[in-house]
Image (cartoon, rainbow, N blue to C red):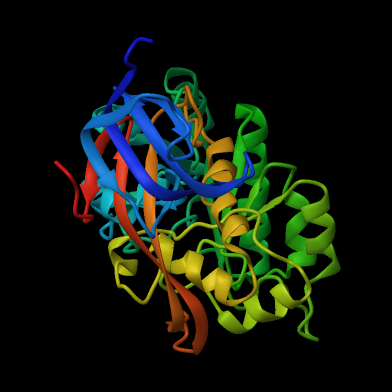
Length: 385
């Protein structure tokens, strides 16, 4: 009998592989050749010698599909942009930049997406004033700020990475009911003309959800779901219109951020079963604190309020990937070898929401290693190489 050798470029051994789409949650090894997953197998199940040019021993840890962050700010345009080459420390292997760029600037900044080691998609800001950084009120000159012809051109040229239009709605962004309705009507017109999703930052708007939600079509994204003033009625219950919108396919995004997550709102909504359809952290330099909206911290927050690890993982991998172009995730032979290794630290952990409220969870999630298309981008695990 011939001597069989499986010698991978990278071997991740002894970890618990969790892939909610495939229904995997067991101890398995992962063998990688170049940029692809070659084998996923239970230890000892392959005949012959198993080795790797590089080996990561993930004992006691979880090997999961690479985390996909559906709401970040990593492209220039905002003063609080997060450095794109720091994403790996957060376990993130793909992301959507949420409106940092506009129709006034995207052409000249596209190269940053092409040069990024991970897959980056983007939404364009509805207003071309997004780069003013707050010094000039956004939507003050709505018709002049929204250049539909230019936006359509950009989607034609960069349709491989552009996925939607980002809109800001809230007391500080679109003050007054008249302006709020005007902005939403304009956004609806643009998204219908382009044929793309609408991603709407909602932060305590002057128009209540029952009046606002009809602007959302299936596939559109209601962002910052659990901020104050967004989804709860005067009695503290989730608006029936929010439930109806969820049933017809509107996506409700947690989009934690440094200022947009109320644990009290989330507790009330979760108690009724109104969970986020996608979990994102709205990653910026403002939210780069271990107690705020790092994606894995926010995953732990959602678990503290009643979600399972598998449900949280699904909403930070396959679901946001489904909004993107060119992204495949999963721990499966033949898929890109983009993986995250997590340490789920068990025991009481104190979380603090965006309003300073403390609450306790039992799981603190720490990213330990990030692999993108077979390349180790970040690793804090003692290895055998």
